Amino acid sequence: MTRILAIEDEPDVALVLRVLFERSGYGFDLATNGRVGLRKVHDVRPDLVVLDVGLPEMDGWTVLERVRDFADVPILMLSAHSEESEKVRGLRGGADDYLAKPFNNNELLARVEALLRRVRSTERADRTEAGVYDDGVVRVDLRQRQVEVDGRPVDLTRTEFRLLSVLVQHAGAVLSPNQLLDQVWNDPTGIAPERVKFVVLRLRRKLGWSGDASPIAAVRGVGYRYRPQG
Ligand code: CA
Image (cartoon, rainbow, N blue to C red; front, side, top):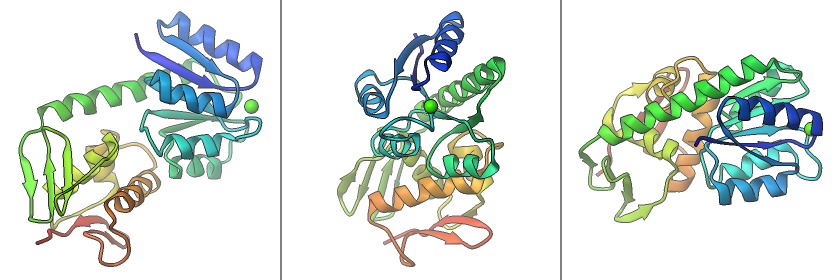
C-alpha cells in the first residue's frame, strides 16, 4: 500500500487529509509537529510527505531541510501563503511541489498522484540502466547504483545519483536545467532552475567538489556540464 505521511498541526486540515487519502486507497499517517514528523519519515519510510510550512517549534522549512539530509521522498508543501516567492523557496529547498491553503481537495489529490507516478517511472528507468562510467577518477555503476570518487565510495540519494548518471553519460556536453529536469526527475514542467540547482549543490558537496574546479561546472545562463576527469 502506498503510504502518505502528513505533517500538519491543524486538526481540521489533518482530518480533511486523512479522509481524502484513505478514501482514495492510501495508507495515511499523521504527525502533528516537525520533530515527530522527522522521526516518522525515518522510521516509516512513507512514499510521499505532505508537509505544512507553519508548524509549532520546528517549522516546515527546517523539517524539509533535515529530511533532505537523508531522504529524497517526494514532498508536497502546504502553506497559508500563496505568493510565488514561497513556492520558489520551497522548490529551492528541495520540495517537489507546493500548494497554498485553502487547497482544493481534487487538486491536492491530482498533484500527489502526479508525484507518485513520476517516482515510479524514474524507478522503472533506474532498473533498465546498464553499464559503467569510469574516467579514472569518477566511477558510476549504473546498474548497481554505486559511485566511487578516487576509489572511495560515496553514498548518494536516488535523485543525486540520477543527476550524476545523466551528467556523466553526457560528459562534456552542457545540459540545460529543463533537460536535466526532464531526464532526472522525468518532469519537464516544474520550476527547473531552482530544483536543479538545489540537487547540484548537494551533489557537489557530497562528492567534495566545490568552487571553480568542480567537475560539475555551471555554465551561466545555459546549464550544467560534467567535465571528464583523469
Ligand atoms: Ca499549520
